[in-house]
Each structure stands twice: as C-alpha cells, then as structure tokens.
Image (cartoon, rainbow, N blue to C red; front, side):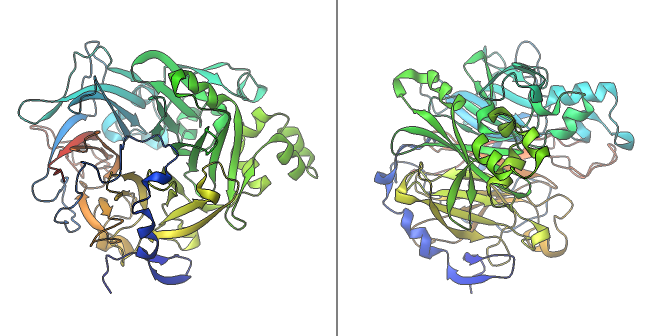
Length: 541
C-alpha cells in the first residue's frame, strides 16, 4: 500500500478501509454548485497554478525547506518596524490575508494575526509569573498587524514601511461590542472593551474585511487583570479603515480557531467556526437577514443578529443554541437557570450552552473551510490523545440539499493523519483554484521528532490533489524550521505567491544564549524570530 494514499481511518480503532479518492472525485467539475463563499478564488481550473512539484521528504533541519525551483522571502519578522510611527511586528504569527491595492497581484495589504508570546519576545518568565514589563510587552506584541507588501523589480517580496495603512492592533486597542452580549452584567455592562489577543486563525468576509479569532485568551486576560468575558470573541477589522474595530458576540464566546463564511441558498450569511479544545464542538451562525452586495461593509450588521447552531454528529443535525433551548435543557438545575438569563448569557458561556443542547464533543476542531467548488465543509480535527486519536483527521460535511443554511447534514472522514498519509495533526487549510487542498500541520514542539511522531520530523505543509493522476495522495510541499508550526497559508489572487507564517521557531528554548532555533538566520543574531514569508516559483497552466 502506498503510504501516501489517504485512508478513511479513525484513531479510536475503527477502520473503514476505503481510499479517500472515493470521495475526492466529487469535487471535480462542480463549480456551478457554489452559492457564494468568502474566498479569493475566481473559478475552477482557470489560469491558476498547477499545484504540482517534486515533493520533498520530511526534514528536521532548522530551515524552511521547499521543493526545487521554489524560494521564499521573509516579508516581516518579529520586532521589525512596520511604519513611520515605529510600531513593531508582533509575536506568534498565525493567520494571513492579502488585500490587493488597485487590483495588483504584487502590491497589497497583508493582515497577520499574533497569537502568543515566547521567550524571544518577552524574555524568560520566572516561576510562571510575568513582571509588569512583561505583561505590557505581551499585550503589545499580541493581536494583529496590517502591513503593506510589494514585489520589487527583482522578484523579491518586501515590506513598505512608508505605508499609510500599516499599523498594529493589539491588547491596548479599543473595540466596540455588538450583538446580544453587549452591555450585559456578565461583561460588566461593557459596550466597548480593551484590546484583542490570542488571535489564532481567521477569515475574510464577503464585504472584504477580516474576521480574527481569539483562541487561548484565558491566561493573558488573567495575568493582565482584564475581565475574562471580554475575550474569546470573533473580531472584525477593516484593513483600509483604522477606525473600524468590532467584536461580534452573536458568534459566541469560546476558543475560536477560525471562521469560514458563505451564503445559504436564500442569501443569508453563514459562518462556520471551530472551538480548538479537546472534546469541543463545531458551530455555525446563520444571519437573520440576507446579504446585499451593494451595501458593502454595511453587511457587517448581519453578524449582529442571527442564530448560532452547534453540530450533533450522531443525528446529523444543527441544533440551535438559543435561550429557549438552553432553558429547556437546564430546567432541572436551578444554578444553570440563574446562569442563563438572556441570549447574551448564552453566547458568553457558549461552550457550556452548546453541550446542554446536544452538541457533539469532537477532537480539537481547528480550521474550517468551505470548498469553493461544491459547498462541502472541511474541518481539521487536529487530534485528541485522550481518545486515542493521536494524528487527527479531516472531516468533510455534506449539507442537505447542498445548502449551507440546511439544518441537517452527513459527513465523512475525508483524510486521516498517520504513517499511511505522511502527516500528523492537520491544522490550517486552503484551496487553490484547481481544487487541491493545502494542509499545514500542528505537531506540538514537545512531540516533534519523538515517539510515534518521529517519522514526520518537523511540521510541514502538504498538498492533496482532488483530481488527476495524484488524486488523494499527500505531497509534502514544505518543512518548517525546528519547533516551528507553519500557519496561515494564503495565495495572492493570481496564485503566483503563497504567504505563510513561520510560528514559534525554537519554542522550547530555555536559555537565550543557547536557542534551539535561530531561524530566519539573520546575520549576527543568535535568536529565533517568527515571521511571514512569501513563497514564489509557481507555474501557470
């Protein structure tokens, strides 16, 4: 058996030995099924990249390794100055989104999330207690960066620090609250809050703004003495408007990984979301009103009013997380009845409410993407060692009637991590316009190159063709530096450049004089810096 052919396999011990290609072919030629998704692809098999290359083997070297004829440029790295005001690029680079300027494929705004700090950004933390200075640095270096990037006449991608758009959004930036939790007692009556942090992945809206997701916010909120309930939300920013900053409470409060936005058959906006914790649920939000392209950013109001649902995989149904349903489920428990007095309380304590109404606990649902070709929904279930699901899998949801607004669905295990596939711990996903699925992995730094993870070596990026002679095979495209995680893959519209974050290289470093990684190997430096690279070398069909 070819070890790089995906099998439908669940780490709990149940195996259905059917090649993943049995389902993969369904993507081919179904562009007409698309209702509308918030992606940057313009068609199926048009003039975009082939996606084919000579796959690399896993490596454990301290370098970003790519196939022959590909190169990368470090566009921005931790602590780089990004604008004339002297603001600095943040720590823990994650999600990326590219916004062309004047329709250009070689100049635009790049929005990057900053998830968390490391020893390289705030120094060693003694006895797990940050100093006042470290708390300030931590809040500053988290959040988001908006930078302007361009490709010069020599084909090298660079950052333009003269940009009037470039700025930091961080733990000090004020945000307006929207939706049912705005002003409620659980949020201390707040209608605006301080800052955003723990920004993991995200998504682009149909009206060209960015949704950024607050994931593991609890520790930073506690050490900074900030109200816990002010974080764990989906944040909206407009790269072109510095004043536009929102947190949408109708989308629920939990450990958000990303958002994937599309349209229901009747024109309502649908947002899929994962909760990156063990035994956590998969969600979708459906707006009350319909999307109107002519309103532009005015459509943001759709995220303030609608219904949040949780997936029950046993029944194949989306269950509403409403005050009425939660109250019904909690009727016999007075303490719960007192906890959930309003829909604002329901979305604030969403994880508990979702389980009460019947949401299915799953294995760390991270990135979710809607296929632009057939409206099926792909979910990275990264892993759950307490269930024996060590290497994770990718779930594919089929909504009833091919309608993202449906209340019933079916699903399959599209691909599973393990020796047979060549990858472990799938995390972020991206489609190219050939229908190929790009997957990056998230093996923890403490597990890399050890035990059952030894054969995978460093974290990597894989491409799964969904049609053609290599259909269903994992082809490794990249291998990251030591103890790094590759995150936030995002193509320019012409798919000639792929932006990719190199997150937390050298993460386990304890002694700054002896780092475990020194990527990106800047001259004279003995430290690692997270950063964003622009990968070039793609061929047009």
